[in-house]
Image 1 (cartoon, helix red, strand yellow):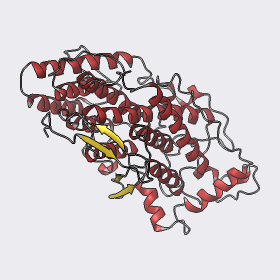
Image 2: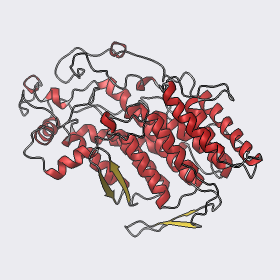
Image 3: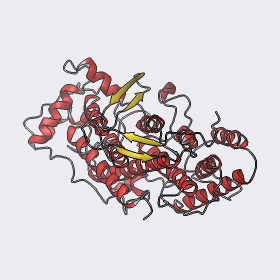
Length: 451
């Protein structure tokens, strides 16, 4: 698929909130189309997000990162896309490197090169990019290499193309240097986190023969993209097992999240399953669709995506730091084991099972809520209003959901994780709060206009 550069877009964009507040105006650069950003955002997504069981996350994907790590990789590569766009269009402070670009440098060549070289490197810059930790096989990297060669070969030869490639190379060099030895290649074990002794309230890995892999062990040790430390906004912890709040959340997930729940409505079941898709893929596709629908130009689209993905990546790092700090048990362990939790208001049910198989890492806080809360808050900051209509699709259900506010989707996610039997309500609320806090920090410190 090829995109031409310099396509005309609307001269002015009005995002009109539905609550009567003043419209937000985005003045677009009519000579700088968002098309290269959208194309390479999705190319990056394909190389990071797995296809899922039987292609359930999308057969076009060939990556291997579960949502926690995928969010970090998407944050890194979208920071590179942003720096390349800013080098071309100006107007904003760069993330990693400031580059003086010739006025006619090709944005398509710059964005393509920055994305490809950040992901898998190039002999031209003497770098492997995010490989080998990205984990692409030789055959998978060949897909990305081929897409890059096809895309760049379609750009007219000349100084504009050469200058664009050079800008992309410089961005990739700076980004990969910044992420060198950042913890993505570490391989910690559960023992490295000093797990507490088994007992009530303590998470235990999912059973199986062989034992299924535990996910997210790298994340607490990965250098954040914006935060000072992974624990910078660590939440206070789950509700005490003996508290009334825990008993209330226990009853809710026991009743609504069970596999054979008679209390969960068909609409609630559909909502729970909708968000069992790979949420990084869901949010990225939604944002790229939104950028096109709103007529955002090159730098606006790159900035929106970078704000959201850097926030989402750091939210996942902070989330898994908390998960492996608190080690809180999942409902599928808590409900059968309630006789030992010390709370007279919780009743054990040895036959209880969740609607879907539970992710294999500790419960508190909810990773999906952390990520979605961060992305939604970054989008709210970008548009300067929460009241923007947008849609999200799910490959898990083959349906589309329309939202009138960014945080309506977060509320949906929070409810869905209870309805799926994965989380206690407090963990969703604390996760989305963590995500919002991370995003506010990111947008306060990065991607700002030049003075």
